[in-house]
Amino acid sequence: MVKRVEVAAGVLTREDGSFLLGQRGGETFYAGYWEFPGGKVEAGETPREALLRELAEELGIVADEAWPWLVREHLYEHAHVRLHFFEVPHFQGELQPHVHADLRWQRADALDAAPMLPANGPILKALRLPRQMALTHAGEIGIAAQLAALDKALAAGLRAVQVREPQLDAAACDAFASQVLQRCRAHGALALLNGEPARAVALGMDGVHLPSRLLAGLRERPPLEWVGASCHTVAELQQASALGLDYAVLGAVKATASHPGQPALGWQQFHAMTRDLSLPVLAIGGLGVADMADARRAGAHGIASIRAAWA
Image (cartoon, rainbow, N blue to C red; front, top):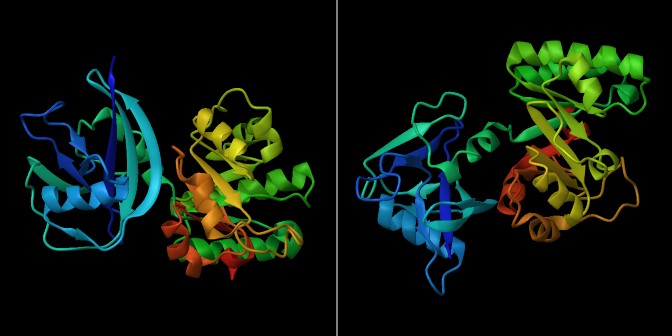
């Protein structure tokens, strides 16, 4: 019987989007492979406590914060490993390779550290997902006004846009989505269509965002590079995870003008619903950039917003 091992792993990040990888030493399983720092959760420890101890032992640093992020499982020849990933945005001390053969700061879109430890590989795509997603509302404010706001936001660094236009007819929405895609491509940003996967494929979009009604009937992942879904329940989040989607959006965290009367989740419930998921979750509902730190402390990958994104 393969033993089950709980492991805590730290994704140390810098403001430029880079993250730290360590190369495994010569007397370990998968020697020479690259991994996120961390180690086994010992008896009596929480995963967070184990991570803080491992970072001190492996790297000689003290983490100021460790935000819960993803939980993934992997079956190795020697063990069934359950990895608890935490984001560590700030730490004290100078990095020292006490157990690793080498340390490197990397970017997910320009990785030169290889090969990756198999259990850590899927995390790289999650790190490519921008921390902020903006949802369009051209049907409400007008197409010209929305495109002007989009140009301004892209110039300021926005890198993920979801075209969500329930007030536009299909032809107008498709024409608008094509304009959004053109602008996003010029800035290296993702352009996603909220709706049917076939429409997203036909338009050449970077991906599709599934409303919860479409997620419910899905039996396999649509054939696009990026696939996400709107979720409101734990069952929907688990469905998105089981299908291997790239992200989910969960809300509303706070009261919103677009959904009057809908009860707000709050950060405590958001964390409880997402704490053991294997895919990144963006928080939505009355949120702006000022809420980013609170979102990530609660386990969110980042935030999605409509009005605040274009302010």
